Image 1 (cartoon, rainbow over the protein chains, first blue to last red):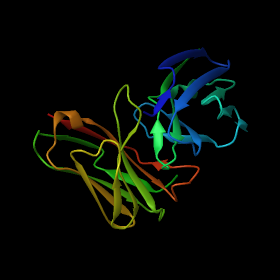
Image 2 (image 1 turned 90 degrees about the horizontal axis):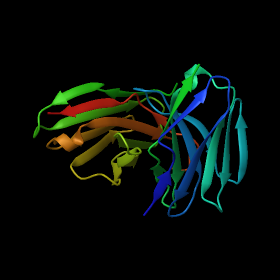
Image 3 (image 1 turned 90 degrees about the vertical axis):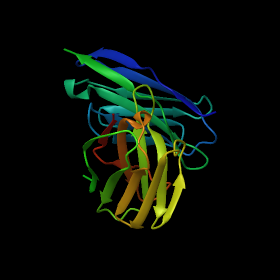
Length: 109
Length: 113
């Protein structure tokens, strides 16, 4: 079967750095996505990785290792507004998105 | 923001009744999707459409049907609602199946009592 694993919940301090991991086992690979979802709202796109390596976008970076079936999302200079769920998704060989259950990130002052 | 709206935003219905949720887009995107989101689960695909009158099943399609008679509208119907279909339903759109990004509607919270 296909599976995406990410931690259920993480806590971090305002101003700090946090790394959210995602491991996957899917039928084929056509890209990995990270979305942010605030409580009661729609998911919004953060990043897309299809090749190995690090993609940086402001305070957020995403890393991919296809050989290890592994990705992480790195959030720097954490702000209170970063409190949200972070969803990892992989597009499989049929171009279907397989979603993890999400990581709830709690930011403390 | 991408032009995608869902209606209704909230609905309470009784077991056994039919329910239709609507997704409307103004982006002229070819692909439209219906997902459900439940605690402890990732988003799960119910049905998707790759063009007018072209639809296909997702992983949790039982008890659901869809229709797309116009590019901009994608309807999800629960033929006979059950309590297990209580969930938050999201519509999403993308230009193609290879798009870097999909855009989501604000969601519909459906409660079946």
